[in-house]
Amino acid sequence: MEKGTRNLLIVSSVIALGGLTYFLLSKRNQKVLNVYSVGKSTEAGKLFVYITTKSPQAINNFIKKSSPLTAIEELDLAKNPNQNALKAGTSVEIKGIEGLDGTYSVIAVISPSTNPNRVMAVKLEAKDIPSTYTNIPNGNKDRFYASSASNVGKLIIN
Image 1: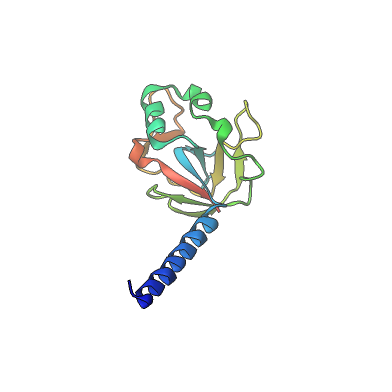
Image 2: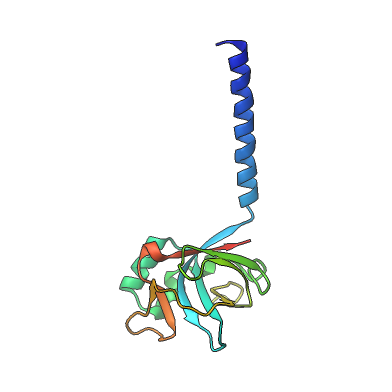
């Protein structure tokens, strides 16, 4: 291998490594959670967005085979961010949910009664229920769930 080609290979490798390092470091503070449900708030123009660390396929299995009453145990909400990481005023981005994609400021958080330090839902300034989220039998009429694994959206904590 010629010296010029070798030097070019080394320089391009260093640049690629630098870009990869920058990408990994810039994303390390972002926490990505899956959105499995959306609920209507009693306040006009506000929605609750329910989050979990479970995979879209596990969420799909939960929605198809379980009762909404067992959500806290089955969705491992104890692994969700704590209220120091996700609280009112935190900037979040929603991706992959038609009609909700965008950046929001969290208005309030809801915690599960079994683990009050964790966040299971955030309240956002949004009014429309996504068309890909539906009611499930024996569920709350104001709660809507992803209709399939491909409709599970992402909530990114900035």
